Image (cartoon, rainbow, N blue to C red; front, side, top):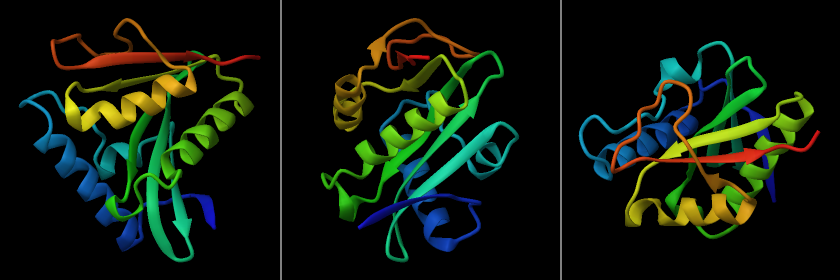
Amino acid sequence: MFSIHVDDLTSEPTRRLLALHLAGMHASSPPGSVFALDLSGLTAPGVTVWSVREGSEVVGIGALKEFGDGSAEVKSMRTHPDHLRRGVAALLLDHIAREARARGLKRLSLETGSGPAFEPALALYRKYGFVNGDAFADYRPSAFNQFLHLKLPA
């Protein structure tokens, strides 16, 4: 059974999954096109990180970065490769959206890449109701990146 916890990023399993996430983003993206947060970015004020655990094993991570204007960004979503297609990402995305609503946020956004490595995540986001839209925050559009948004009901 999966459980979700706020994660302080100090455990080795969480750090290994974060390192795997960053390596995957760099391997699947052109130079200069990776906006995934590293450990220092994930511990910044306004960012909350959750891990999904099965027993003591970290099987997924995800984060919410608040902008202070009623909107936030989904960051660092990653399922451990040994646990793909078991519902980890959907469970975590639902948790993040529920937490955003509980915080009174009006919109969730995310930036992601293009190509085969990103298709499973894009399918999940679109199934959840995210739609393509304009760049947000400090992002600049390119031929590689995509921006998705989800309006949150009050």
